[in-house]
Image 1 (cartoon, helix red, strand yellow):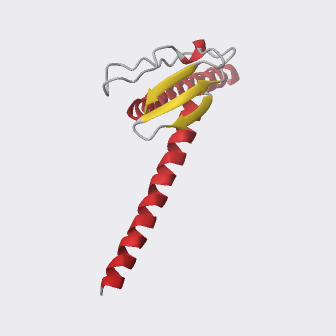
Image 2 (tube, rainbow, N blue to C red):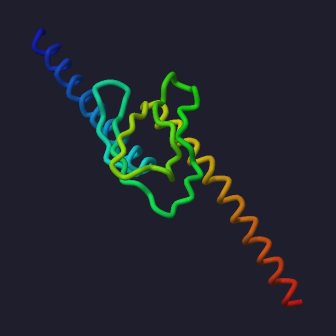
Length: 128
């Protein structure tokens, strides 16, 4: 009986480790996408980023910590990142930044759809 319990425990431990590894990989990918830098994670809730820097980007999204989650860390806009600059970002703030980016992209998509519809209606008027 003890062998069965130990096997269950080992299986569960392996499944949990695989889940944690997937989460860590996803967080690294998300951080690299959002922050344009080389990302490493500490043992806790913090990720460390060495910025690559972005030239010519609009820098519309801000990494301001926002007072949410008790210390996001990064306080400069993405567009003003200096290559080689080291930043610390809380994992919770990273997820908030991803949500902000998705919301901004939704607004942009809606504006582009309206613009396309306006252009189509102008084109229809020209044909008439």
